[in-house]
Image 1 (spheres, rainbow, N blue to C red):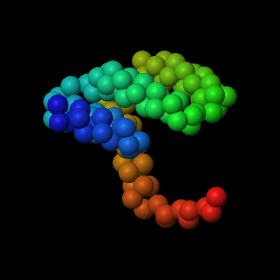
Image 2 (tube, rainbow, N blue to C red):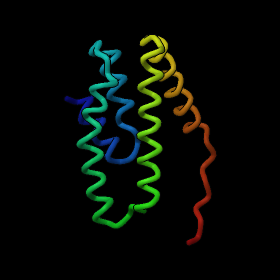
Image 3 (tube, helix red, strand yellow):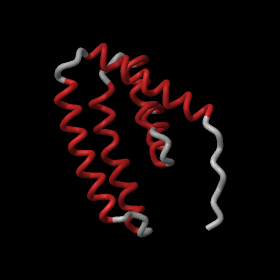
Image 4 (tube, rainbow, N blue to C red):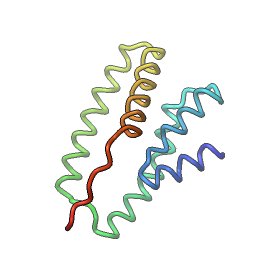
Length: 115
């Protein structure tokens, strides 16, 4: 419950709470975290979508393009994941998390634009 709550909080803040949940589920609970993570993501995404729509912060054309590209990527990823062993997929995911984390830690802060 604590890991799910923390994941929800981080996800609502745009920080990718799914990474926290998957790490907990695989390392501590001994479960395959990917499917559970996707189920947990749905209510978080719907809630965020509601508030972004309410604040008129969504560009409809960009959202449709991103949704189409995401669907194509999901289909390709599903197809590829059936061809790759689970252990290899876990290593790839772990390497991606490590790379992204290191990039964020060592990234130079961007200057704020005057708009």
